[in-house]
Image (cartoon, rainbow, N blue to C red):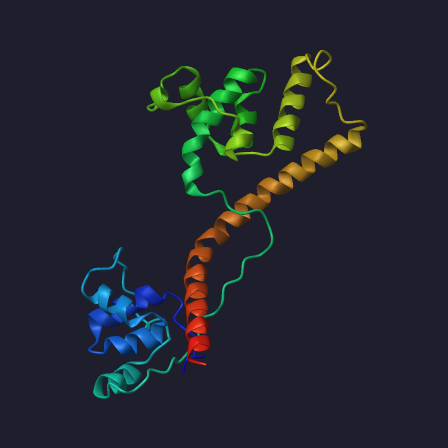
Length: 237
């Protein structure tokens, strides 16, 4: 049964089977597509991280009757009842990792120092922050002000250079200073409107990508299990 689909979350499923059944380590390992030593380490609490158990019966991947067959015969190999649905990622910009959120104060500080002509509303839309946060950084009342260091938001990956240039150009025009700046005016009103529409489309796509990020985590677990199963099948062949 090396070519049998594996659970969507193999480690979490193995944890549940270890804790709630008397199946052998070999049976659990084969069903989940894991190495038997890894399963044994999980049972002995030697694994690097503790997984929250995932009930394969509730998920529809196993039946209680199938588990009982395995418990009665250690040579029996569990048969998956319903393969998990593969989750595919649609096209679009990748969701910015949560870890990058801690870089936002640095980007805000850089904009306040280098482009004071940009309004708080524009900064909020460009980086995705609130006016309260901007105000706290400006008047140095932010809780982490001692560790905030101004850094280019483009370098931090919080926005693109094109987005930043467009905001700076718009703010400069509103302030009446763009005539002294380097030529950034886009020839023709239609070109400028097209650029703004593209930026709006990118922001909308980012919002949609955020909803897909949660699904990616489970999908990656399934893909890793699938690759491991394929490698094991190739080795047996």
